[in-house]
Image (cartoon, rainbow, N blue to C red; front, side, top):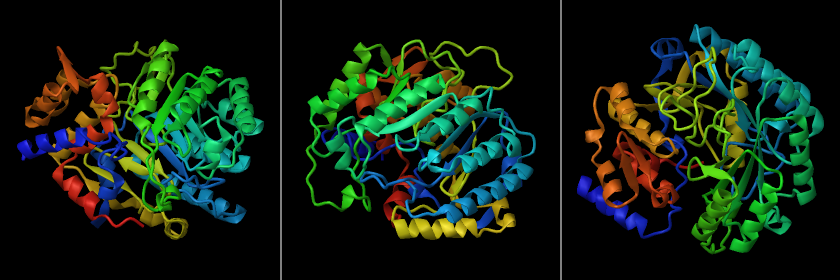
Length: 470
């Protein structure tokens, strides 16, 4: 099996590095109905609950971008939004009653576009996090996703007053024709106004998302957008490659995509490194000197593997009564229809879809869910010991902290010899080992998505391949 895997990696490396967007493990398309359902009280009683990540999902957007395969909808009205928010409140009360004593070390509000909510509902969701769930928003990293059209002054001031320290905005491009080609209708003036408002509101960390490989984009226009973003001196910038996925607007197009993504990545990376940024992962870049402050929750919703851990190479955080969240080892509590929750042994969520009608049906089912059903996990993936180790390796490798071999041994009571694939990363110059740290090389980082997919277990691959996308 290993020889086959080695050969597969070599063949993968000869193709585009953009075969699949690896942002979690296991991927949600590996989830299946749980029979029988799992009692959350029993599940969480066995989990360390002293440094959890709280995530709340808001599935509403003002438009559906052509590249988007997230669980989100644009067909909603005020009554539907109100029903959704009330359901999140009901779910939170049930979940919190089952968790027992718990400490949240991070909170993220994602979607969708959380700032699409009317301000009263946005405040209600913040109250769910702080009052119902007990997250200390003023003293933990808190991140919120927003869009240029919804980042208005009142909402930004509310978020900042409630402790949000990281504001993340999806810009994608500063060139209107490129944005329009993806189905977005934002103007550059709206983007610049929103960024100025975010800075005026006083967020310690502002993140800008940009996408390379857009229709009509060139390397030169890509660098123009990065330079335009740098004028606002964001503490973080995410550079996302375009993935054209089934059932999305761009995925239904017959267009052949010019693959300039690797050239865009390399030149964009070089520009950011020369502009005072350090690379945290394939997609994430952070201003030098930003690692020691109270960091925002990082990533798109539940995405990137960028969370600091005790083995992080960043300067240590100041003393705090709240433990630092470690994405490799600590759990996540997800609220809302599209959220995932993680424990050591089970990842669970609601059903997943991309098609707008299917999403609507799942949302309606969520809103109609009786309180007692929120006491169970009905859909997910059970992680055995081998899958837990594999996940730890993946999440460690794809951030700048790397895989700390001593930490791995302390966590699992064994070394990484059970994963001989790692030696192949070294032999192919995709990783280096410096004493107890295994890190991807520059070439390894740019091929993260290929390496990640290659490291998936056979079980996860089979489940993903047999999943029928809705």
